[in-house]
Image 1 (cartoon, helix red, strand yellow):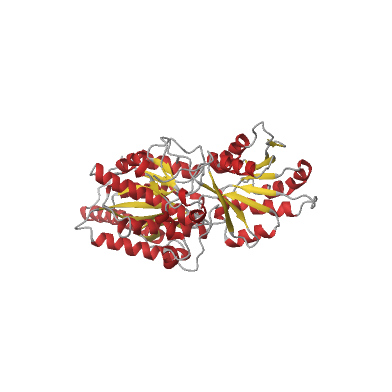
Image 2 (cartoon, rainbow, N blue to C red):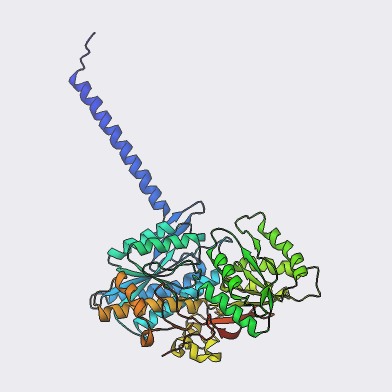
Length: 492
């Protein structure tokens, strides 16, 4: 075998060439990665994700996620900046409001509903930081977007977890979105990392007994029993349940099952047929399924139809009923709280069908005027026509109750922060979560949606449930306050 010997200067050139090539390759790779990262970055803590390039993650208010949120986000950013300015003299913690803020037709929330939630959250921040409930430590309000249908919940939750150990000192996450598998997974991951949680509109009864988790909304069981009690007082004796059986829709599943148990009682109140079902996960079929139901209802002749499905599906169901063959029969439909997520336009269209529509809401500004003993007067006044929200955000009607629920969720966290600081000194997520179970008697949450204390499973005790009627112009009219046990919890 012939041995080839290379001159030293040739070897050096080859070596330098290889090193240079590798270096250029690495620079190129890191350069491309840097460019891609920069292109995917929407703002600090916010990045593009998914085929629609949604901007998801956590903002201090400086990034707005959607144009219709600009007004409230600018106010939140200004308050957060004030808290930072005083940080040298007064320590602070952070609370996040998390839900889907970049919405599509696949979401049950509407732009109006999530905007109102944020307005209420900002009100609670102001009340705790500098108004009538001023306490210490103050908190910054972070806004966390999980994307449409919470598709990017894991990224956003991981970003929140990072904020726990940094200068942000995140101790609680509120909001948490509707009752879906994705949001349940997010709740469990936050729980695993010792962060306190307060759900504002999450009602599925199956979401409970999770460490650090409570909710200010009544459960679906409470809503169903409150609705059944109201219908019986109105001398309704027969009903049919229409339910979405989509696997990921925890809201519809628990709502339908609860009413099926609550209404029949052996005293003349009965279901005249088995549950009628549709599957919203089969996009090509669910509208047709709803369209064929009125023919069966004409035959069964129930006095009321209990609709256990999302608000966006309710509008299609009402269209179908309005085109029924038995026009001489009058139908009354009662639904759950997701009806409050419909836009004003959708509600007006629903009213145009001529079908009488009732629903159990989560809150309503008129609750205090009609049943003052069931809600906190100082909290409720902020949601009246001349209250603080009307001053800060004029020409934005909030009859859907979402602002009240956002407020009460953040107010619960604020009370937990204040109690933890008073009794334990060190304000952590774990300490705040433990305080939730001390909120009873004089320490209960003085909410605008009702007085709130919590069971060991995280559900509120006998929470007030407003019964609402959709009037001809699509506005929710308050009828009465009900509750699972008849009379809701009162202040002490």
